[in-house]
Image 1 (cartoon, rainbow, N blue to C red):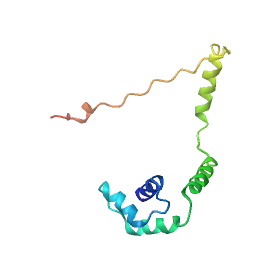
Image 2 (image 1 turned 180 degrees about the vertical axis):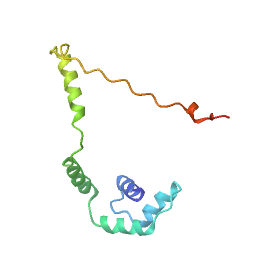
Image 3 (image 1 turned 90 degrees about the vertical axis):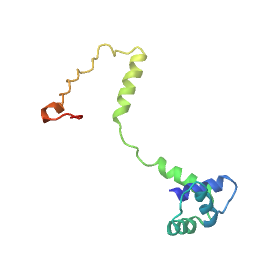
Image 4 (image 1 turned 60 degrees about the vertical axis):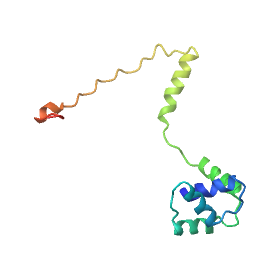
Length: 114
């Protein structure tokens, strides 16, 4: 990830085709050693490709990935309905059961500072 970040920084700085040495110099400027094998693989994979096109393609792929959780939307919809003057006052949320207290450390026979 650090190699990719340095590569992208160089791209933002105007270097359209950063070399392995360019990436190493960026990483060494902040005290990070570059892994030559990973860096060579990254340079080989990105060679001749436009960074802006890669970012656009990646964004499209990420947009199609489900991000999970539908549970949070219901609470927001209820809050919005209540704000709109709906019948939210008639619907009461179920009361939460009190959580059980955990046993105290005193039962273990010693204290933290004994």
